[in-house]
Length: 428
Ligand code: NCD
Ligand code: ZN
Ligand code: ZN
View 1 (cartoon, protein in one colour):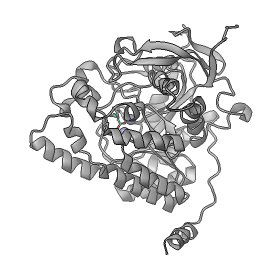
View 2 (cartoon, protein in one colour):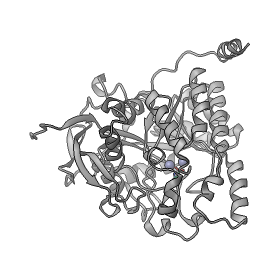
View 3 (cartoon, helix red, strand yellow):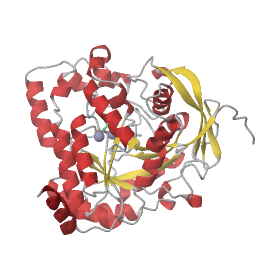
């Protein structure tokens, strides 16, 4: 099969380390077919899917159940196993059964999964270090969050901005710092999900400087929206963690360009329009779809000269592949080398419209946004799954779990006492 790609660019397909496809349990919001259709339309060739489904992916039984659901996937995928207070004993079996990474909810979010104590995290990190798998963190401190939120709710505050007030940056600063300390102590590899504030960047950068194997991601909403959008978007913009001030976006852009923030993910978190449009911000579900709009939005930033195309590929593909052991892959050359490809037209203009999204969550804070640049075709392992901005028939089920190609790199040699001495030596 030949196609004419004159004037188009071939990029490695985006690798999105943070999606919620809702199946099993919440299929009115999304399922593995609609979720991976959206990914293919968005130029995303591999997704890592989160464990806050119903039931949560907390032991081998639930992992097998999810693998069964994922048989209809159109793109390749990894599966997160939950790391919680009461399933630390299951982590090894989860890894053996094919979990590709772990997810630890340090703060409460959709699914109401209780956050583990620091003691359970320490033990979980020790096991994860031995297994070599990365632990991704919803890094917000539950106790601080709950205390502040309860006070605001009790005071009857119902303005979208209250959502920011409910979560001052300290909830993330404390959580990133604590997780980094545990990672340094245990040798675990960790990944900070959905970085939303300038405050988190410092503990992230400091941990990197100390040699902790820590990576970070941000999402388009934290780069492109800020508190000035609350009045127009209302409860639609509600997301965990919240979109903050313009100065936060600026700091995150800088950190992304310098590499302190490693990658772009989407936190694709679909809910129905009814679940999003609520009178009280506290009643609206948190999150919105993103896997289909990430590439057009970020290519628009390329078109505007905010980042280069090379920087975009580093953020969307190279760094996630490196961090989660998907590179070197088959052929051991580079991401995209086994023909996971997004063929993009950097000049194509589109307008984002929720009703045209392939996700079941047909509501987005980016409604009406004009984008420049879009994936015209998407190939997964050399096969078209999306062609000419249309899903290719009969390719549902083409997606495979990445377990057979994932090879986490050998851990860097480390010695806690020495690195501690080095850090203390620097200060003294
Ligand atoms: C996510 C969801 O709905 O599953 N929601 C969100 O606001 N980001 C959960 C999460 O990532 O915290
Ligand atoms: Zn989260
Ligand atoms: Zn999420």
